Image (cartoon, rainbow, N blue to C red; front, top):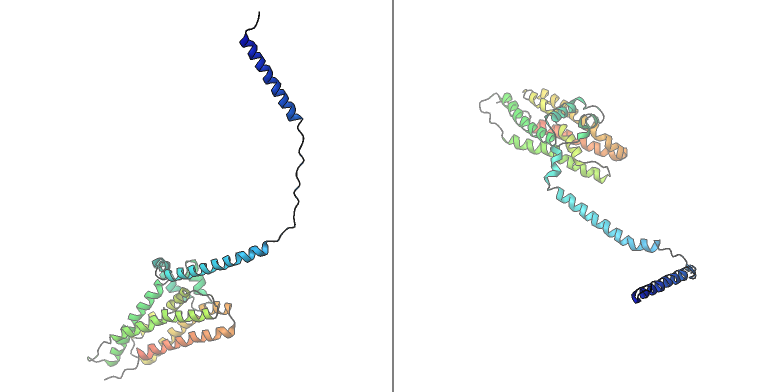
Length: 283
């Protein structure tokens, strides 16, 4: 049988396609191999110095910006309630423990810091209410002392004792730690302000029971009672302050600081005795 023209044309096209594929395959296998091109390397250039020179102004600029932001954060934190909230994060049990501990460990080196404060750290709640309570105790008992000495119906209650006691005691428990903090910072002693405030605040605890007995209308007894309270308070303060002061500086520099603490306590003692429990002439 004879093939039609279409079939012959189709077979002829397939044969030509097969020949083209075979020739392409032969060309692929017989193509020349290209050798890798070698790139000539020049001398290495040390860019570390130039990078450091270029980066140093950026580093200095960023450090200055960070310092400015840190200073601004410290300023704004003074007006933030959260800054002071942690200083009042105590409960009744903590306050009782610290009140008792200030008397039990008053003569132990760093006893209050290590055995009483512990991990919870200082608080401002205790020093504030200790100072406020002592203000009313001093004002009331000094007037009772004067009344019992006079034994007269012409006695007038001195309300100004409250104002004077408030100025004296709050200056002692909050103002004096601030002054001492500035002194220690100038000496390079790293100490937090609240650590000093809590020590000065709880150092007033011995005066709380003593002022009650100061109602006794006898000057000798009052002198002895105030001397005893001042001695316990001063020993408590020196035992807990001298440790970190001496560990951070020399004895020559720490000596004037400790003398300053002693002198301030003596001034407190004299003002309490002469200004509040002074001698009254009987009418």
